[in-house]
Amino acid sequence: TLVLATRYVLGRERGPVVANLSTTSALDAVAAQFGCPVFRSQIGEANVAEEMLRRGAIIGGEGNGGVMYPRINFARDSLVGMALILHLLAETGRTVSELLAELPRSYIWKEKLACRSDGIRAALKVVRDEYALWPMDLRDGVKVTTPDGWFLVRGSNTEPIIRLVAEAATRERARAMIDDVRGRVRACLGEN
Image (cartoon, rainbow, N blue to C red; front, side, top):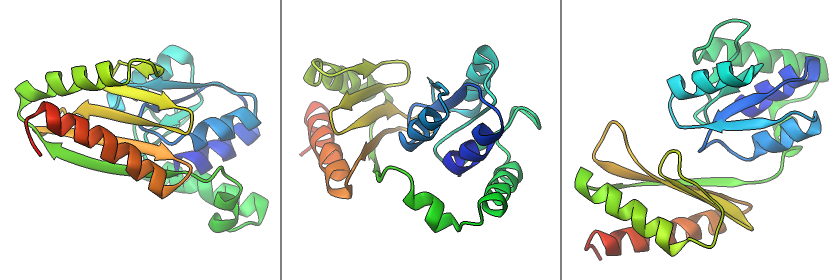
């Protein structure tokens, strides 16, 4: 949703885009087509809105489909997202499937692990240490960028769990990244 809405907005005006750390890299590809930067924020609507204000973003949102369009408001608004995409469909004469086929193919795999709150910090340290040679973003858990994708490990702010998210060009590679990091986190937590 956010990727297609962004394509429509950037086709009409140029400016910065903001998304959270777990949003697909397809957003970066769309913004690059228009020569526009993408800035990342911590996960959460308030964090995205704050970064949008700071960067003067013309659109933003989260990977869960939440579109934030400041011309209307600085909150996730599904109706605005739908309206922007409907405009894109009407103007291009294409279907959603045709528009999606133009994007870089990628897959996101998500899992969660039950974890006491005192184990989250230790798990994040293990991930930082084990993947220390890769580029990292530590603003909201640990996001590691690899040559063929990325993964994010973070403690939930609402439940006693660790969230694992990975994106890669194939479903198998995204799952393999999650399998690897899950194994390291479970070992740290004393699980099999």
